[in-house]
Length: 406
Image (cartoon, rainbow, N blue to C red):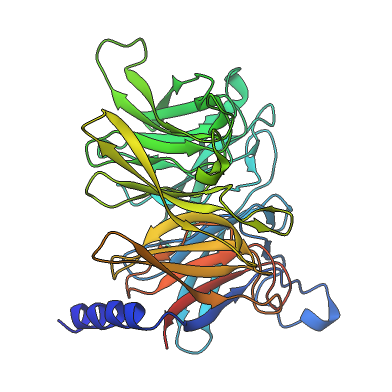
């Protein structure tokens, strides 16, 4: 009951107060080899996280950095609440970049149904073409890593730069240069890979997060491609009369009119449970720093005309530009980030009863504290919003942050 009341109070506070409290949980890039950093808890920390974070059932935070670590090829980290130190970092795995290991995990990790962590590396493997890896918890508190798929043998796909998604049957899905892939458990700790979409639009999907609906369908976005070159929002549905068991649908194409967006962002789309999709893109009506500021869009099914209809629900202007993925907060409103302003912002879009949306800035970053929030935000078990920045912080190599009400 106390937890429920806390979440309700938090949701109400976020809705009533746009400005919120920013707390830095971890500063990346501390290195004991530097004289002024001799108190670092680790010898070689990670650098510049591009992806967001996930939580386990105990409230611990997990994520990746694409560079840093002992071998310089990135790592997987855990942040645990500590009554003395605030949050304590533990390095779960450091990638070596050898032919038997991965390198450069730009995408984040997810928890599988079995409690294992899964993710991708852009490089590494036998031909340095990328991998899919699994981290298995051990009884002593450590983690054991293994490569479950090596893209070196896949001539049509390579270099995955986004995280994975998993369906209710345990299948994993991701994007790579060349298309969209599926990994299915095959027994005895083996996996079977299948290219489920290699069409031109799917080939542009790498770097963009894919999502799975409760029905097992997939949806996502491509930053480029489509008939107008401005990217697409697509869906993949399972069908029986297809060579690979899937059918690809383009829900909407961008770039015909820049007022309505072009260059869909790599962040994950948000789904409201009512059949509507929300995302961000470049373009829009206003210029920011000699480039278009960007938009937030909504896609909804138009039954009368049998098509997906786009509605621009916000045009960025002023210093705020280059918006990224969206997340529904505990209050039912949309939250997202912008990369510039000048060091980035966290914004909120409040849904009004008349169908309009009210925009407000929740947090404005400054470089000394945090800079360039590129990844989607995550709602923590306490209802607060958590995220990462690529730059800024104490050592200028990114941070993990929390946003909670004042």
